[in-house]
Length: 259
Length: 253
Ligand code: HEM
Image (cartoon, rainbow over all chains, first blue to last red; front, side, top):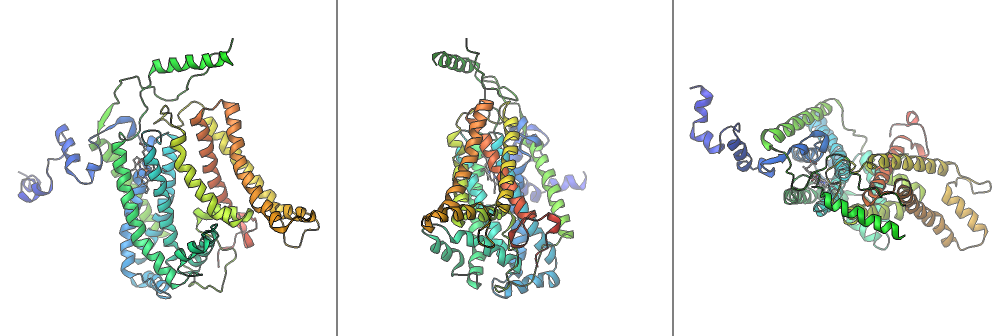
């Protein structure tokens, strides 16, 4: 018996993997049912839905970006100080004093842009394939909220380095919100915790960026994925009733002769 | 006799009633694709993170306003609108309305035919292309016009359609509040509602579009507007947000 085969016979291995390697139909079913990550999928999927040219994998990529942002974000949180001028100084220190510091910061930045683009394109793919149509209406609505959260995540993160780029971009952005009719001054207070961007704005946005918005995003993604399954899995062309089609044609023709 | 009306011209596969979808096992057919995609993307982003540094400029200084000061790129479309109309309209009402209208799409287009098919119908792609060109041409033209409009006699430094309208109406002796309302709210609103409205009318006439196809036209309007306005804001707005060529752009100080 090879070493690997013997290892697979140990109690340890069997306690981790509840089934054999999935190369038989039975085990291909079991692997999906037994794994916490894989069980988000159905056991079988429509052949036309796994074609890359159908979804371009964009929903999955949105999730991947989120995961990359979580990992790199935790790394950044070890070193980041949400204070003035501590924030800027910790960014500088990241570049020189921290192992993988620049790498983590760069990756976090590029994945953040990547996530906005991926989510935006995912929405566009869902739209042009008509995948929002009943029964998936509400999942589309959840998606719109996810899109908003994604943008807000990116926007709150933009301020955190506390450099000129961050400060003035947020100045422009929050000036737009300030002029909300009727409740403008409340919006400003809620967003900036003051009349201008200052240290307390930084704390507020940091909290939104690392806790509130990510949690909201996770909760909505959970509902989003659940609903994909409940709404009948990924969209495929609906069965086309030829009788129905004929009747409709007749109805249309009748309508037209009446005119 | 009237011509037989066109039926719903779905492109792509027609699934017969009670016909079963061909199913494949998730493992390995889907899982392998997901794994390949994830690994490729992680590698690509890791490569980029290794060689391209995220910007870090001088420490924030509230007294030193950069010129131009720009929002993050995904807000530059809205910042572009800001140049042409009332800030409450550009910064709050337009994005708010866009989100609400987006969320409403599935409650307006409720016909299930065309689900799961790129562009749904034979006319879907032509309508998309037409709408994209229509939107891009009109918006680029409007941005250009707004950059140069200036009547002789207008106060130094003022230009743009709204300022011109204000200037003309002021001559009539109307109250100032009403006058600037026309220039910065009424006219932009008419344009922002009118352009997609006319698009919908054209698409209905020219293509005999059904609800789904009108939706395609309107989403394309939204999508193209985002791209066109963001691109203008990113690549063509220089000092004091005047139009420049991309190669004339100064890197931010
Ligand atoms: C954080 C953001 C998001 C994540 C992680 C996400 C993830 C996913 C995933 C993994 C799928 C499976 C199919 C695919 O990959 O295309 C999916 C489907 C779907 N998504 Fe999203 N999504 C997000 C945002 C959105 C947005 C912004 C919308 C629309 C406004 C949306 C609407 C939908 C709909 C309607 C489906 C079902 C599509 C079908 O059955 O063909 N999602 N999403």
